[in-house]
Amino acid sequence: MTHRTSSPHQLPILRTTTDADPIRLLKHEAVPDAGGYEVRFADGRPSVFVYWDDMPSRRLRPDVLTRGQAEAEAKTIARTERGKLTGHGA
Image (cartoon, rainbow, N blue to C red; front, side, top):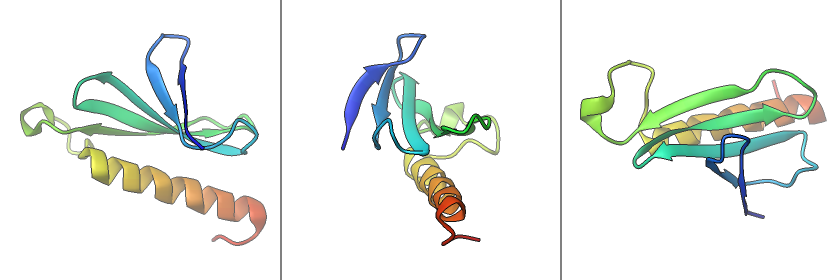
């Protein structure tokens, strides 16, 4: 299920899971073609952020990925952490 909502900073967030999930994947896009994915944990652990920028000239840091790469990495992190919670992960 996908919901549109706003963060406290009024940036659009795409929720790809429900509020009841222990781990949520949130997409943040503050400017066109740049943003990040947040893997948010309901148990109070700090979120993990994976940043992306689809304009190569703005990718000044080596850890900034393309949108597709960042989405895949964030999903992998979320799946791994969900697996740990359910006993099916590493």
